Length: 110
Image (cartoon, rainbow, N blue to C red; front, side):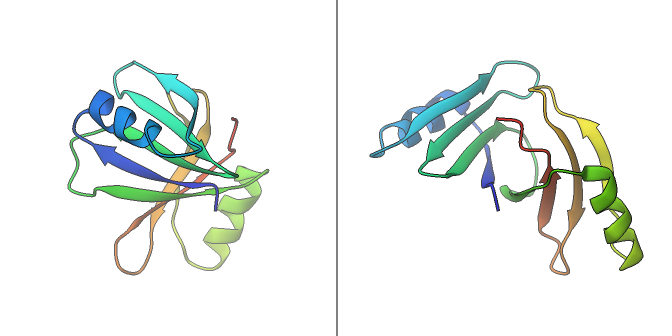
């Protein structure tokens, strides 16, 4: 797993809070339609995305070959949507686990 993305209401407030934690490093920031910040803690990331969604988070799993992974998921009956580009440069696709949690597979271009 490469990280967890939290869907936040106020990106600046959340970013300030996470950056106040020990060893937090701001790695990427985007101020477009969906403001985004990626904060590294060791080898993992907490990604903040300003979204108005019912879900408050999603997990991210990195892969080197989205097309192959989509085919493998399809072979075991898991439908994934994408790949599609994000506004900050990643390619990703999304699905839901059996409990309805969002799971994103991305090419983890950081």
